[in-house]
Image 1 (cartoon, rainbow, N blue to C red):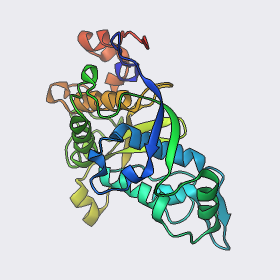
Image 2 (image 1 turned 120 degrees about the vertical axis):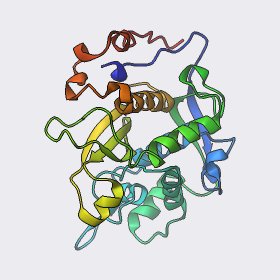
Image 3 (image 1 turned 90 degrees about the horizontal axis):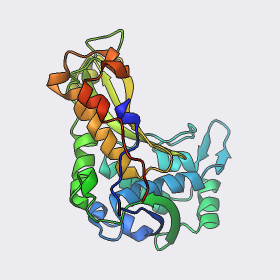
Image 4 (image 1 turned 180 degrees about the vertical axis):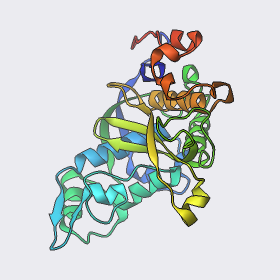
Amino acid sequence: MPFDSPLPRPRGVRLRRQANVDLIDLLRPGAEHCSGCSIEMAFQTLRMLLVSGIGYRTKHRWHTTSITSLLGGYSVDHGYPVPVQSIADLFKRFHMAVLAREDTPEIAAWRRDTGINAYASLKLAFPHYRPSAPVPHLGFGSEAAVVEAIKKLLEQSAGQKTAISLNSVHYDATVIHRIDVTISPSGFSFDLRYGCRTPEDMREHGDSEWGYCLARTIEGEPFLDTLRRAIDHFEFVTAPENSHLTTSWKDEGFFPKEVRASSTVNTSTE
């Protein structure tokens, strides 16, 4: 599928592989506008914190707590974090990492072993673009444009409808409940959650919900590339001119010629 392919990177655009992140920058009010740490670096930092917390767990009589639950939005361990659903949700995770009370042994042990505190400066390794700089080949003219794109996807998509039926059984399941970002050791997954009722009707009447992956990190891919693919995929499945397509469009042979052509890309990392 075209949206599963790496995006071309123009010659001369080089990725950075190392990052220094001051945790205090992620704790300040309005942290998404901090010039020292881009939103791309914030997502990657949370991923690295989650990876560093694997194995820190405490078994209690009736439940288990862990660093995954601390950073992932659960009060007890589920083995995986709750997907990030907004910019505010993203930065709340850093407050939990640094400021949550050490009510259980694994929190104190993890902070001690990794040096996590409000004034820590972390050296992390992940591919990324120069912080807060324009990335014109992805359509992001500024850091503010990146933040706005994420907000539009995660915070403003609920209640919209897909033009394409994504469900091979329930063709009327076209109402978007939300889009969120699942974080795993290998990267990020932008997932569209949808059903038959609007989010407002769901609260009163309930609804079945299905998930559909818009984009998942390809090995070595920067976060912003994954975000761009998710946006392009979202725009495709919600474009009115594509309403004649159904689940069969996922077979590459059903793509219009111009969409198929876009799947041929230059994967050079120069």
